[in-house]
Length: 103
Image (cartoon, rainbow, N blue to C red; front, side, top):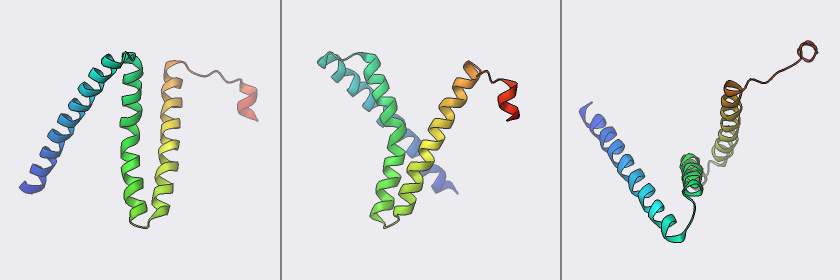
């Protein structure tokens, strides 16, 4: 029980250090190239949210589990769309007429 806990803690530390190095390096590169910090931030968020799906898809296709890669892509897209629509509905609820609900 102690060894897996140690590995999980080491993984979290390495994940945090890697994320910090990636963000600071990309920020310096953006400043050097004259790119807007907003564009860099949005690109980092997009890459960061897609990286786990990319890793699972690569691993599954190299292991001849193409159905897993397809399910990963479809599930990820459904989750992302659902989360975006859900958050937007919390911020500004969508008004629906009663007549539409009855149909």
